[in-house]
Image (tube, rainbow, N blue to C red; front, side):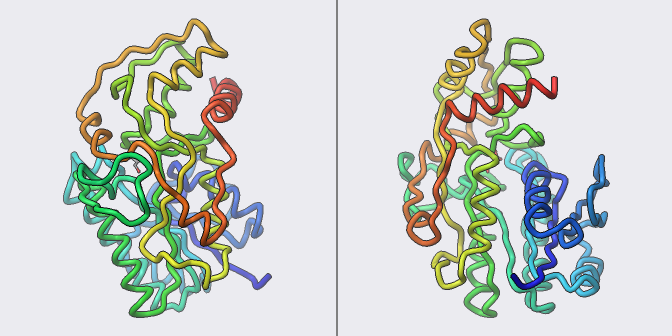
Length: 313
Ligand code: SER
């Protein structure tokens, strides 16, 4: 395998925390540079504190370390971006465009950038949402992700930049906590169940959303990045699916190991974001092109979360 130097931007976030660990195991500690605007709690390898909007610093870093791959994860999620729309646009859009330009200038071999189910909107088919369909995002986060997908596709066509992307569903893991998202309830519920035996949910009981266990998401991301370039036919972003459930169904699953668990529902503004998103995703194109295949269903995910979050309480 050719020597790779991988830069992960937004490394302290929900995905970054787990992705860096996975990449370091696979590529070696010193070959994976973690970077974030905030300092990490613990340092396990090379780390650079940096704002992705600082183009000069980012260019220097990529040149100095002869970076061959960038995973650009720094972004503001749906609920936070709705509160700070201009900042959300600046971080999510300008951050991506900086990375794309630097990647072209410095001849970075591959770039990964996450998109989201938030690119879909009220006019999108809700069940088994296809890879190609009407996309009318209703959140600023979704607007930035949809525009970003087209920037990626444009840079692939115009400059031949090998940029790859996945539309993540809600991601659920125990090693990190999300912040500012709508699907976050499905992480908090486990922590609250174990700490308090109850959870007050900000979505309605019957709000079905596509979700995925973090282990699947990380493995899928790296599999996409390691696939031969000719297999990657979609240069906007790939649909991938894991499972779909509602808060009510998740509570029933949790009660199988914790019968006394109680859930209450007080939907807030995030309900409107969730209502505009798909209930389930058709990921047949990703399966066909690069072999995507999830390993976790809802009951396996609940088992893992209840075991591992217990260790954290
Ligand atoms: N998990 C994201 C959010 O809830 C959607 O991609 O904002």
